[in-house]
Length: 282
Figure 1 (cartoon, rainbow, N blue to C red):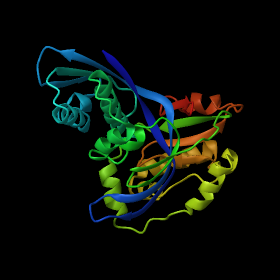
Figure 2 (figure 1 turned 135 degrees about the vertical axis):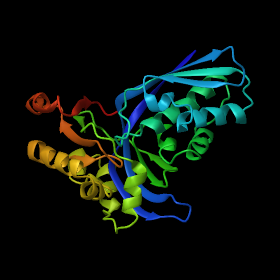
Figure 3 (figure 1 turned 180 degrees about the vertical axis):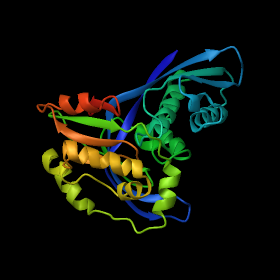
Figure 4 (figure 1 turned 120 degrees about the vertical axis):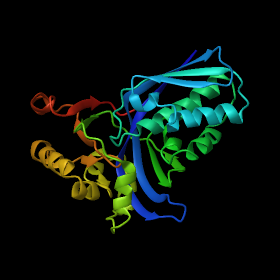
């Protein structure tokens, strides 16, 4: 039996540059992982050439999702005849901009690689991941990274977040990534000069980096989903806008916070309405 953790990823920065002819978008991202994760358990079953997913999540229990598609591809491509059961304890919220499905798919690739001793390199695993989603290659890394192209160009970086937590605030609302990008394609998106972000990354200047957190999709989501517009305004009123940004295509917002500061008043006031977690950055 093999156990893999699938860590949530967040975007501290996301530029959506343009749409390619193949339907993907060119991106500039600064991604980090946080200590919120799903747990995947892999074991052999006495049912040859069969892959089964069991989960506490209804979407993953549906046997036609991207996670099981990745598992079936791995078994088919590497001529795995054994039956396989993957049990997923889901903790990353669905449709929240945290890369949950991509993280689970990456964990499936790593888990099958280990269980069947395929000895695949990270680049080989990332090549497989890219076939099923642009976020999966990054989810196969363990560090913060600058991610460009459609998600396949990954530049691992060292950033010292030891003095910071990341507050995750989710409004318990589902936002469709497909719908957000469809709306974004009809408008001219704002982009920010990523060279400024690189400068602060190179200097490991987290406090200045907080001033540059950005997401091209945030204005689109605000404009088209009134519940998110109201949610963001509440966060700005309560927490201020410094270090606050939407991650992915929403619905979650994140805020870089100093470990010494106390946010218990906000948490206690809104924990019944929102999902709020104080996370470490890995």
